[in-house]
Length: 210
Image (cartoon, rainbow, N blue to C red; front, side, top):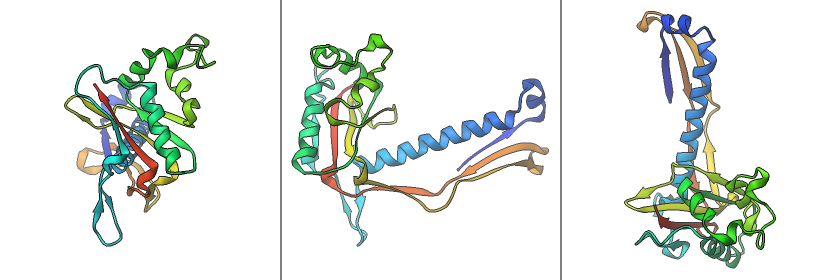
């Protein structure tokens, strides 16, 4: 749920339609919440049909973060791909990493050198664009919502169909005057949803120093 009141005096001073700006802010907040729920499903405990839970197996976790030398590297991406390949998990593959992970890859010559890839940063391509299509990943998402434990960042490589997002109702959006707040305009948005990991073999957790 997300709600915010807009003071009438503020709306006049802004000289714009504040409702649309606040509605956009609500939509972005919901987008971040969806990302948080999906990320939680990737590395968290998956609930089974009998109310028991299944943790992501240790065999689906790679990398280390003992020292600053343990960065996110092309070798780790290659290892993640190998795990997905070995399990014969078919489907579109997504890589989720942090901005620090993105920076680590930029420091890896194998990631940016024209000897290994034809997609160059100086052609107006972002690091995530380079990673997309690299080593078989169809999509790359950069987010700071990934779990960070002490100096350990947890990124994920996964097959899309191996993680399910359930939405029990359509997004409810209301913009109306609130009598309890001196009739200030209130923007309210609500969405009921949840996510779960469906196949363990389709998710690989990548740990690196941050």
